[in-house]
Length: 272
Image (cartoon, rainbow, N blue to C red; front, side, top):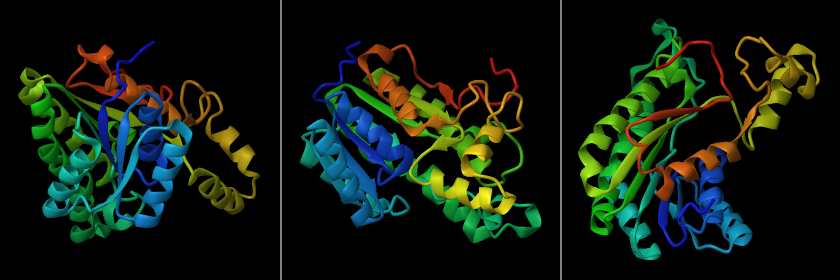
């Protein structure tokens, strides 16, 4: 299927590694020139080289912090200048979500850590969208895709779940504001996803439980296992990239203001 993306220009925030990097790679495979953003220069420059070498598309590394409006405004403008426009924004920047200082229980939450979490993922995405929208309006075509997370649909994480829900609300609000300009806005909920960090994380858990990493993963995703999913395996970051490419495409005009899970059918709740 031709997604109609050849020659489009994209900025992917949080693209130095993991899901963001996989998304940048998949967009480039579809003919998109990509600006990859991270706070870490060495990491994002390596990611950009990899994307360019594998796809032959332009891949520009940019270093800025999404918690700074000044850096975001300047960085998005630089991306549009380097690429010759901007049609697609993917908001994938986030802090790791495992610290009790952010997730709770409530008596362990540190306000400053919680606020930094929201400032990075929610307000950071808002800053990037605000800076990118004028370029999309000028082009008369745009796609904003917010990478949220499956814990938006589960109680228990006072930071990760709440920050992800906030992205859902922003997605719907911006879709209503921007549809008249030819811009769609959608949200993806990844679940447990295989990235570069997965082998190390599995090895650490497996050692603590006296298991081989492969056996631990098989147990985690066995049929009916708590926290598993319907397809009985971990979703790969590239599969989140496939979905992102579709939502960014000419084929997805009818989809806006929506949330699509890419967690392999995790959970048993019914959403309608």
